[in-house]
Amino acid sequence: MTTKLTVRTRVKKVVGHINDYLVNDISFLVLLGVLVFIVFVLPVLIEYGHINMIFVNLVFIFLFFTGIWSCNNRLLVVMTTTLFLMQVALKLLRIGEVQQNIYLLERIFGVLNMGVFIFLNVRLLFKDQEVNLYRVIGAVNVYLLVAITGAFGFEIIHLTIGSSIENLNLSLTSKAITGVEEDFASHLYFSLVSLTTVGFGDYTPVNMLSKMLAVFLSTIGILYPTVVIARLVGTGFRN
Image 1 (tube, rainbow, N blue to C red):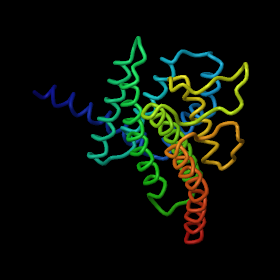
Image 2: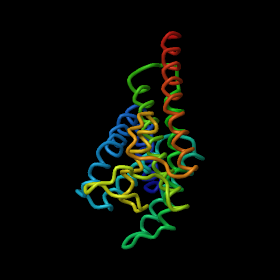
Image 3: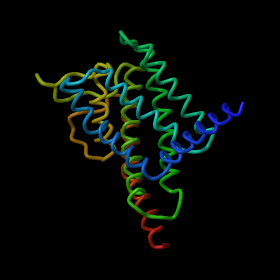
């Protein structure tokens, strides 16, 4: 009996140490590295066919897994764990063939998962009155998370009504958007372009849902940096 209690105590201590590490400011830096890879490197690898889509799915599984340890709140831990397990289950169901209905469910749960993740990061970003490098990194994380969520949104629209965005500059080296998993790179590119309000004109939304999502991302892209800068500057003056 004493041995069992000792083992349980040790396990609790290990879990406690892991949770304390991942909840602290260092987790912001780790998350930043994963998000930078997904947003700026992964689309290039997908476009030029240098990686298998299994690797892409593993990257997203790792991203969603980090959300489980992003807070100490039991309800949020249960929520993020449930969403993570749903992601894993849906991805396993798609092994060997592309099933549009399962892929659609996967992206819907992905949006929910990212929404919770954004909430957790915003809460951690403003958890105290201290302004430091990790607060800035947290703000960048939220920005990149919104870009990925927007890409999921365009994919959901395409899978639901058959279209979302269109490539206006089709050439021998480019391809049309067909709604397959490999189109994630194009959806992420357009999401990020909309969020940054750059608007190169090579892609365009083709229905009202996509247009409103693009406008929504542009609105966030304008307002979010303003709010974050005002918050950080205001906190700095108070300190």
